[in-house]
Length: 89
Image (cartoon, rainbow, N blue to C red; front, side, top):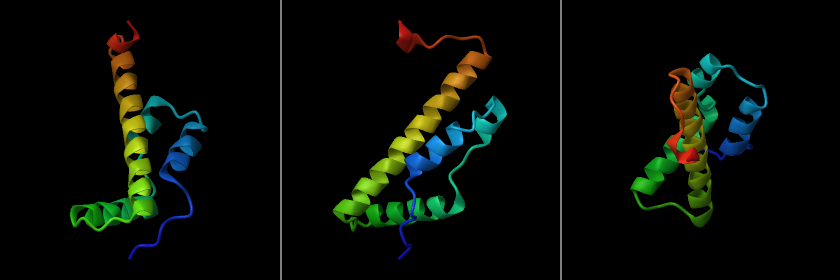
């Protein structure tokens, strides 16, 4: 079993964003190796249907963190291309 990291992936993303990264740094962002290993472990457990409730909540945090970073990267790419975000109306 891969031990749960002491930090949450959402905290990892928040800490990164607090550094005010430029576009290049944002596009290069990935989770730290220990968090990535933990995510892979949780995905394996999920695939086998063996997640505990706590592990399921932890996996949900990884999914939220990934969604947030993906949205930021998409919005940044749209801004770079001079396109607007149609969800703003």
